[in-house]
Amino acid sequence: LSTTLFSSSRGLRSIPSLSLFRRLRYLWINNNKIQDLSFLEKNYCLTELYLNNNELTDISDLFYNPLAYDAGYRLYVIHSLPSVQLLDRKPVTQRERELAFPVYNCERSSAVGSIAFRRRVDTLPGTAIRHSRGPRPGWEFGNHTNKVPFENPEDAVLLRAVTRSIMEFSSIDWNKIPACQERRLKHKAEESPEKLTIQFR
Image 1 (cartoon, rainbow, N blue to C red):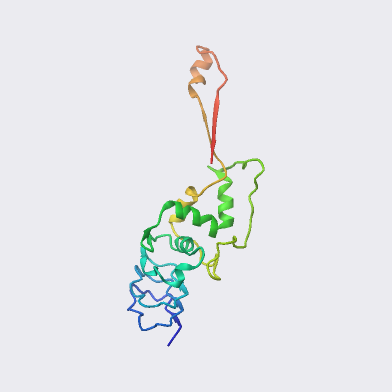
Image 2: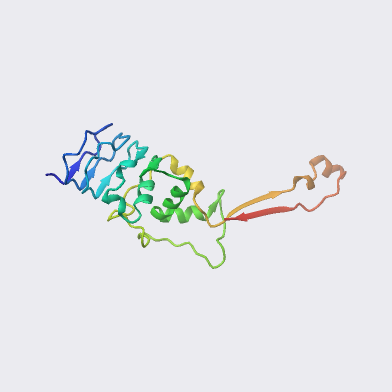
């Protein structure tokens, strides 16, 4: 029986049951328009599944498969499939998306973490932003860490949502700044404007 099946980039919207492929281990169905994985039946030997660039919203069918026991599996799937809303019978939370982003997008996460509203802000004393191309210990998914690109319109939303070093907002009390006519006629005594700066993680 076949252990490998390639069905990438074929415009597939659905796939018939693969229950006859009991020994299937490697399945490529990326770059299609698949919306669910109901075709995965009795594929207990499945170890590698490539799903990127599909229209999936529910992946509950991976429950109790060997694939689901790999370290970092859940965050890896959430990162690779930004559209997924339900994974292993559990809703995907925004917090999990935020956790997955820096794990599998180390360099982009570090750059975003140091930028707030078009200007760079310093990190806390004693901290430094590390750039690493290698996977973080304990966050590998088989032999495929960081191989699937994170390309989705939702990426722009996640850029704002990820944890960053320090966010800084500044505001000025405009009531203490005289208008042009007041400054010219000196109807209002000039006061030094107060700048309020708020920083939080």
